[in-house]
Structure formats: structure tokens, C-alpha cells
Length: 102
Image (cartoon, rainbow, N blue to C red):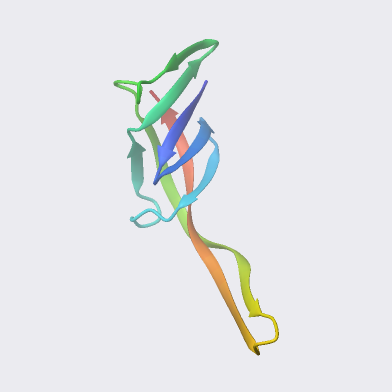
């Protein structure tokens, strides 16, 4: 059994007892969250596709921790002008464990 869920504007394929690194979600570690925007549900071969979402289905999980992703270097340069800019960025994620689909 799996579902495709929209979490903070991004789509994730989730199953029970799986960890997902979603964009940062408000809440402390240990709190439970539920996601209503279920786009597809596969229950042992029977597929339900939502238009746009599947009615009456929720995915619930628990926030485990807030983490940062790998550093991404943003480097800009204009040749022959002496212009260079170097910036770094680390995206913030929330580690969520999926507890139930249904």
C-alpha cells in the first residue's frame, strides 16, 4: 500500500513506516502531522486516482527532527568585468516518519 501525497507543494510517494525529507514544516519534534492532499492511493493493486485529490483519505506521520541539506554553491561571474559573487545555501528539511495511510 502506498500513496502519492502533496506536502508543501512537492509530491512524495509514501508507504507505512517510511522516512520522508519534506520541505520545512512548522512544529516541534515528536508532534504528529496529517496530510490531506492525497493525489493517488494504491491499495494492493486497486488504484484510486484523485480529481484532484482522493476524498476521505489522510496520511498521518510524526515529525522526527529538523535538518539542513547539503550546501549548494551559487557562483556568478561576468567575464572581463571583474565581477564575481560566491554565495552558499543550505535548504532546511523536516524528517517525517509516515505512520498510517487511510
